[in-house]
Length: 231
Image (tube, rainbow, N blue to C red; front, side, top):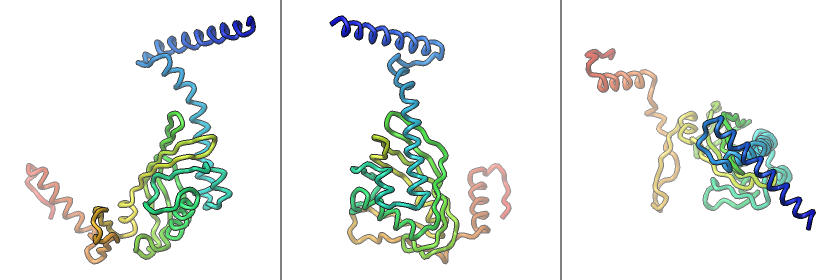
């Protein structure tokens, strides 16, 4: 009993010291946070740093390493991994990841993910990045153009036990379409007979001269006080 009581008293003193330090830090920073929030923020720092290592390992070994074998995926993803960015009908888990990466690799050569910023909170990481690749295969009906593309994107991943357990992603496919010389046509998913393939208006692609004329006309319209036009 004495040993248990001493342990409880020691924990209580420790908690009092932590609360005092958190309150002092709050005063020094002028932060509108509770002592509990400050303590949690401090405890999150090493956790977030470890989570970043997990994400960077996945990028290095899987995506940038062009290796989505089951062995490599199992080292980086949990067995019950869920990709919330998967298309309807995609197989779950590793099989779906392998299918999507293989399809991507068939259209884009040597993709490389270049991180711009990584932020974290708890077990979540948010990533803003540019994806560099070379368009050397058919993509959404568009034949290879041999163009270099840069695709902006944002992702959120949840880390559990040193692996990625969940993934959400948003990618600028409009930017991709522009860089390979096509337009995407968006249609409602509940229209059964709607055309879902991209339109490729090669014959009406705007020239630099056309773009300059449009820019001048827009400037004249928005600033009529200029009273002149270069066209």
